[in-house]
Amino acid sequence: MYDRLTVRQKQVVWAWGFLAIPIVFYVVIRFYPTFNAMLISFQEWNLLGDRLWTGLDNYSKLLNDPVFWKVFRNTFAYLLIGTPISLVVSFVIAFHLDRLRFMHGFMRMLYFLPFMTTAVAMAWVWRWFYQPVPIGLFNNFLSSIGIPQVTFLRSTSLALPAVLAPAVWAGLGFQIIIFMAGLRAIPRTYYEAARIDGVSGWTILWEITIPLLKPTIIFIVVFSSIGFLRIFDHVYNMTTNDPGGPLNATKPLVLMIYQTAFNDFNMGYAAAQTVVLFLILLIVSLVQLRILRDR
Amino acid sequence: MNTRLIAASFKGRTAARRPANLGQILRWLLLFAGGILMVMPITYMISTSLKWPHEIYNLALIPNEPHLENYTYVLEDGRFYGWFVNSLIIALITTVSNVLFDSLVGYTLCKFRFAGRYIVFIAILSTLMIPTEMLVIPWYLMSQAFGWLDTYWGIMFPGLMTAFGTFLMKQFFETVPNDFIEAARIDGLNELEIWWTIAMPLVRPALAALAIFVFLGNWTAFIWPLIVTNSVEMYTLPVGLSSFSDEADVQWELIMTGAAISTIPTLVVFLVFQRFIIRGVVMAGLKG
Image (tube, rainbow over all chains, first blue to last red; front, side):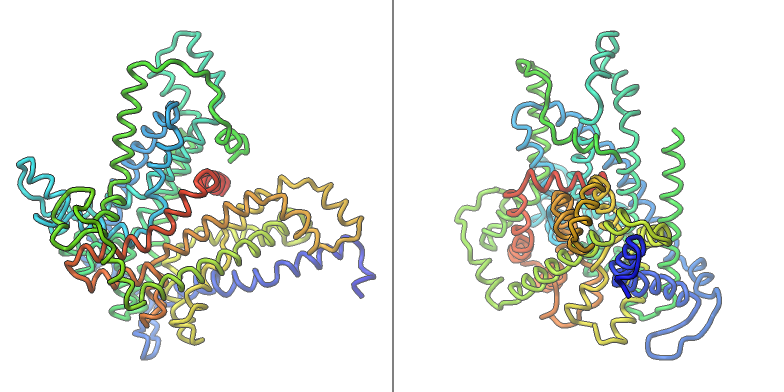
């Protein structure tokens, strides 16, 4: 029967043959679970008992949960501190690294190395750095120059930036490499023309380099924002004695989801939180694309 | 993004060498200092893993009497070997699966013309918007129902194919000329042979880039393996390290040793294939 098909028709058969297993995968492992998560978010279920339909109860509970609002603020704090800092730092480093002649490859390697590490391992290294005297590196250094101790991970105000620091650090290498690729794609002639016109270096940066880097900047902003909104590994490992502590000061949404689902087994409530996470990611990405594209 | 961007990033610098001036020297020094700061956590981790417990309070980078006792102690009970093997098997299988399926789907969506092609493409692409964290609860329920909890399959199944990889490969198959495929068809190769013997070799750099990304992603993955594994023997390296470190409490030299054991393999691989990996990351980052 196959032999009687035309060349076109044969290709259609092949195409669907190639797509068969992947389509099953995407339906079963991606679409069905997405749908299921939304469904569970309207139910109350502790894994053992019956699944009870509760309508929007989980969502109204969430909106009246002070912990959720604390977590919501933390999640956006990770985004609003992490994204601009990593964007500016990686751009400055990439800009100068691009102009470096001597030992260029070696320097690039130094900056890229942290990207190859495991978040869990590095969270523990940084956790050690933050310990009080006489253990922690930072406090030892501070006390050696006569500055009083800082209780990084035990302070409700400093713990969040302290947990964020290794996440920013580990992502810098990737962003620097992407920025350097963007910088090299800008035709040299633009710079030469500007130089002939006697334009200052600062103007070249603002009028030529940054506008031409727009696609790269959009990519890095959206990509790193999604990363910071989903922060988990660092927080979980740096605060294992009281995950998300002290007093929920470092708890991001993903950690709240994890605890609600797999410590409290409150599946419906956790599913509602995942739907909120999904909406946050969607809205933040769309807003960023809109703002950055128009400029 | 465009290919010019990628092509340009691999070209060496074309500007003529000018003699170094004061600004250049200052730039080099500042960047060097920054680079040293960047690798400081890694160097301190390795240095502390070579120290005796009484020495860890000492800020010296080079231990007074470096030794490997911590490594023998940590590796003694064999847990780390098991976790290492688990992580390696899972990362390798997932990588192979992604390289095969993502490229097969990318190729099909790029080179075949059939009704429904666009819908399939958009459907797959739309899964990029769904965060993993939204799916972990349904995946857990599924694993529980089918007995996948605490198995390799349970750890691996969510990552066997990715929309990111499919999109990346589709982009790269655009660069394969249709004439090649037509010619092969006339020579009597079937579609599977054309994909495997004609198209795949032409996108080898992209396959390598995809492999690097998928491998690294699975090697460092934490939240899903943490959820799906129960027994210590089934832990992956990050999950094992997390529980080991929590247990080791204040024995920081042992924690640093565990961290070093899980970090050093990827660092060594990176140092050996540096250029290749950086190129792969740029390619995956810009095209994806």
